[in-house]
Length: 61
Image (cartoon, rainbow, N blue to C red; front, side):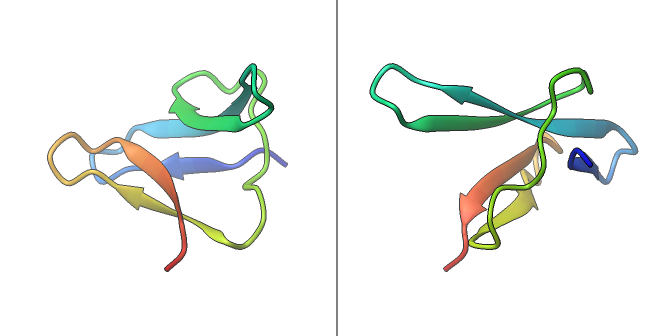
């Protein structure tokens, strides 16, 4: 099941992943559910930018 996050403003965003040239992965959130993925491993957490309300992914501390 694909990972979705509803922010404090009530908008739903879906997690996506893009592989870059060097083999690294770029994770981002989009309003489109097409092509969305599951939350990668448990070492990542989702947080919300307080000013814009956009969800972001970061490694757990």
